[in-house]
Image 1 (cartoon, rainbow, N blue to C red):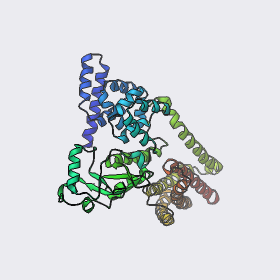
Image 2: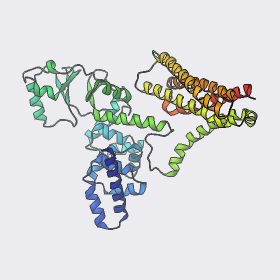
Image 3: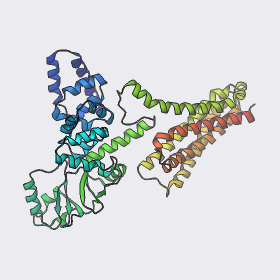
Image 4: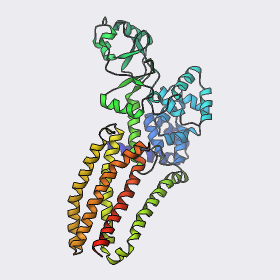
Length: 454
């Protein structure tokens, strides 16, 4: 169960800290041997869960044969910190036996001048494969692909394929299919291993291969790759150049990483944070990263406060307004966030665009109006009874209807506008929407109160 796994991680962390705090040599030997029993991804998780000093001590105990695999699983922020303490030849050795996409991820975290030194420390074969991979942007199919592939011709029979595989003696890790090409090295389809095993050895590759799996171009975005893997239940896909010649393949493990990054980005962006931030980054570094977002929020808070200040005289005459103001702003903020989340998700999945955005906008406005009427009635009734004023109940009810309408309208409009301006809606949408709903909510509520209650 997940809870047991969480407890196990905490138990290991406690044991690690106790052992590293000990100065006895036998404890360090025991710890070093124990690390070998862990999967590289588990070691990476432990490194991410430790403060900087303990992280460095643990890293020193990791064998050189595991360094590359651990780095490939580590979060970008943590990996960058570990790479700073490694010499170029050490990085070259750590990435030597990694798959191309994993090695590329590590090298891309290095400074440009260090990248040149690392590549210069490699043998000609590894240098050539990584230089080619580094030529593609990180967030594209070319950046995700592994260049280690096996291909067969479409006009041979399965017997030839079987002899070819036996001659090779091994296949790239996580392979479930062979790439099929014609005599001009143009992609034709995929040949799953199960087809090789279950069909007549005399059958032609062209007759049993899967032609429904389309190859991806190198410039396809990583998000689009993840979406197609999810929609089409894919396990591996070939990546081709403009001439349809296979360059590599993307496997499901690469896509899982993309999906995780998407989830981290959505979660962290809502707070103005980077998904690659190290949980145990130095205090000054973390403070600098968060300061800008706090400043932006402070500016929006002053804007809302300025609107309230315009009605200071009204609030002084009717204290109930100060008590009820947060309700109007809070309801608008929540309603707007619901719409905002739906629209951002639609944009991320490619389900929302110019063709259907108007329909969604109208639908969200209708939802906002319906919820506005329902909850305005509830709040209006409670406020009227609480302060023994039917007029006050009508004012706050009317303000809530307006604010929930505004929240739905701008909750749908803001992310669409930000997307058009090539600004990440997940990063900026929440702040803008909160400002709008607060300002409009206070303005309408206090404005109506000034007109009808004072």
